[in-house]
Length: 219
Image (tube, rainbow, N blue to C red; front, side, top):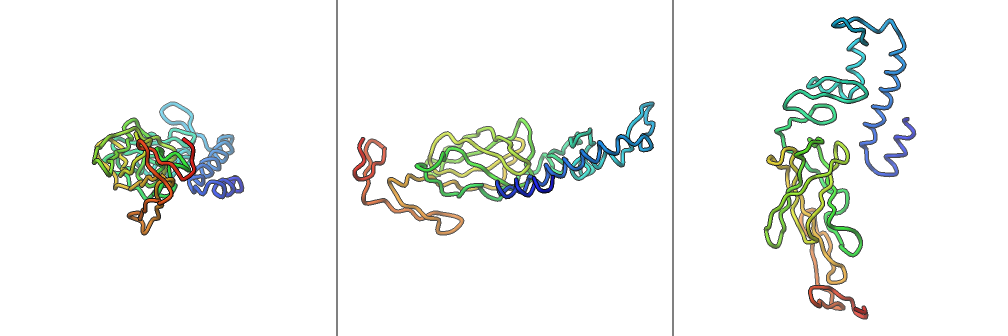
């Protein structure tokens, strides 16, 4: 399990695989101890495993804010969420950055997909991305796709530069992150710092009906 975890992190550069490995190890231990009849006890007229064992199956013992219902799943108390019930549902997520650069060339990848990582994110039906278009200041909301306990994706409505935040409940928002989108056929852009890019129009391209063409390109 440990070797597989190390390989997964190496291939994806995503440390959240450690959580998967931890749960897998705990489940193997659970299967082993559940075969020991000395560890079972009567509770409410039912024969169950000692709660000191079952509580350890779930991540962080559900943080004392929920009940471990087996196989690594927490049933969180009201007001708490997340894989280990450690997230207050009224607290905003904290977004640390994007999986890709905040500067996106629309000729190289799909810039309508933004992948954000952070903390205080939990899977629920109200998980949303809140988008503000930089040029027009138009605002809209799209569903956030929960990928891991630390990563969500947002699908934008267009390929223009935006500010994006995330909310667990559709109302209380995280900090905003910028996603700058450009077309390298039209302009050359570089991130001068973590906040804003520096862009210059290319002299060997032209704009026709809103579409950029390079010199010699047939249209």
